[in-house]
Image (cartoon, rainbow over all chains, first blue to last red; front, top):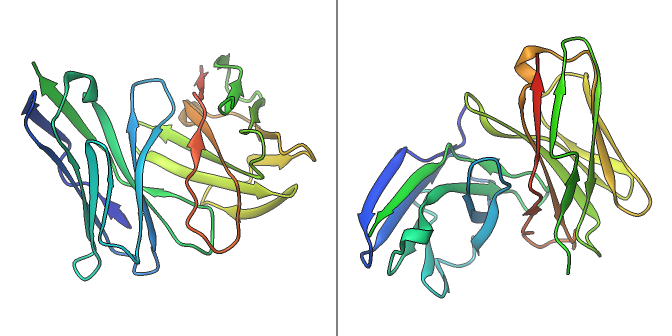
Length: 112
Length: 115
């Protein structure tokens, strides 16, 4: 039972354009959501998070949007840079526990 | 502040052996969680320790165990290794403040290869 899903295994965008990565979840108990960036053979690097009491959170070039009614969140990267090329994981957590449930990841490639 | 550190970074074992992995959390972080990443199953939660107690556990067999010491450092042990245990094992730490969504910060991982 995949409670967090990232339906796009890969995404390719041009440098300077917007990258939009999507994530859907099924567990209504999730109330904290995070995005991580990962390179092969390294640990995930935290990018940005959002609590279920908000619908948007911004940090520099990264913005996360949460639509609770649709159980959907997205990560926007503007402008995209070649250094953003990596696998991006969406993760979700219930406040009651320190247990992250991850999506399958989306490979983002930003072309110069 | 130093990040999460994990040792060793790489390990090769044979089937039937056991292995112990170590994790040192970020200073001041009291919760340590372990995850397994494999190509087929993605990133999966193993267990979480807080105040030297296992607080949360994923769906892994009893061959996977862990512990946490009074300084919050944690170890993970896998006994009777199987080929399918080959994976990247990741440790993450968080401050463990009550009632708040917590960001977990990951170490670089230990790459285990079972032959």
